[in-house]
Amino acid sequence: MSVSYSDCFSDLLCGEDSDTVFSNGGGEDLPECSSSDIESPFSDIDKSIAGLIEDERNFVPGFDYIERFQSQSLSAAAREESVGWILKVQRHYGFQPLTAYLAVNYFDRFLYSRSLPQTNGWPLQLLSVACLSLAAKMEEPLVPSLLDLQVEGAKYIFEPKTIQRMEFLVLRILDWRLRSITPFSFLSYFAYKLDSVGTFTAFLISRASQIILSNIQEASFHEYWPSCIAAATILCAANDLPNFSLVNAEHAESWCDGLCKDKIVGCYELVQKYAIALRPRRFPRVLPQVRVMTRTSTVATSDSSSSSSSSSSTSYKRRKLSNSWWSTTDDDKASSD
Image (cartoon, rainbow, N blue to C red):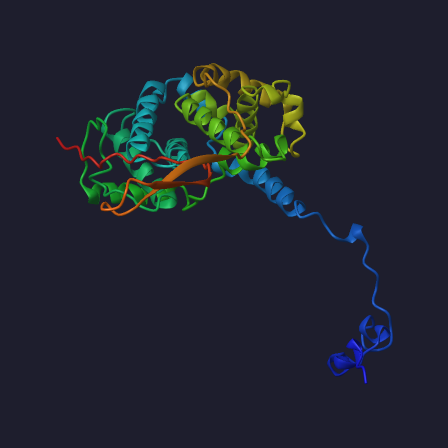
């Protein structure tokens, strides 16, 4: 007697019928769900970016901060020297670009809210060390000691207790708000808006990060908010690629609400001179993944006492090429007077 396939597994099937499965238990049908009721997976990201743009004004100095340099109540040359030292230490230890930007952000926000005994000299050096130490603690997995942090031509060497007291003062002045909104908060989002396929996304972010760091020594950089800086630098990076050479500020303005085309144009013109200096000689090329066939020969020889007869066999081995990432780490150095 033949047994059907359905009979063998009939005892494993549920007893409910389709009407029971698609009802709420009381005999009533469940409400239908249309595709319009399901939000796009990117809607939450769009809302998050909109929230960042709304709150970014709370993490930058006021607009009159630039006027203080113009009136010479603050020394632009002293600030440039301090920021330059922060960038040197960032390169020395291989810190992330965000770490250097945060240090400068803390530095400027402190100067906007609190005056120092003098506008140059040891107070600015102490403030620079404290801000860089706080930024490194926020972003870096390994942070040098406070003494080791004072390298790259530091004019003054401070004791750790002195730096720690300055760190506490910075925290108090900034109201402990160290998780700042920066241009790096927007780079990935804007790069995706420009290149949704992701072919050049890594290049756009890396290039824009270089442009940002090359401009933070300029006090006039603070005329623009982080979202505008991110859009302008991504735009500069895109213009280095033939695929996106026609992208302009009008396109960048459409990436999200809250961006202003005129502000993007102004920031773009400011950073363009540094972007030209950093422009790579060769544009990145996307190569398809290839496989290379390499031929190896194996020769089998007989015992030495036997006659000279040998047989060779040829085999092919398939080797897959992959990119190699090389990283170099500088040795830690400490400077003392």
